[in-house]
Every structure is written in structure tokens, then in C-alpha cells.
Length: 64
Image (cartoon, rainbow, N blue to C red; front, side, top):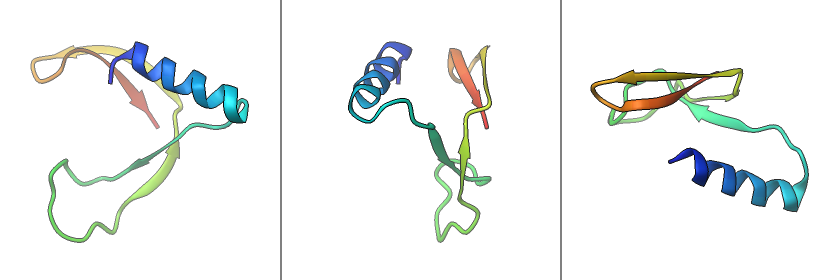
């Protein structure tokens, strides 16, 4: 998701429900891991960092 899309969606939600905490569901397993996932957890965003690499190009990494 591009920053502009994320901001647009967050602003719509903020207008509807106010300034609420944003959380993310995460896992220690790699993407595409099959089977039952037991290590899923909920976390809040702690900070952001602008990064770049061959897989994603320039991107924002969200740290939980």
C-alpha cells in the first residue's frame, strides 16, 4: 500500500471514530508459510524507517 492510500484510509477512519490506537497483526513465520499458525500476535506501531533493498525498492518499514 502506498503512503497516500494509507493516509487516506486512516483519515476516513479517524473522521468516523476519532483518534484511536492503530495495531497490526503479525507473525514470526515467513510470508506464505502453510499450516496452522500459532505465533500470531497483535502489536502497535512504535516507529517508522525509510529503507531500500532489491526486493522492495525504497519503502517504509514499520517497527512494532
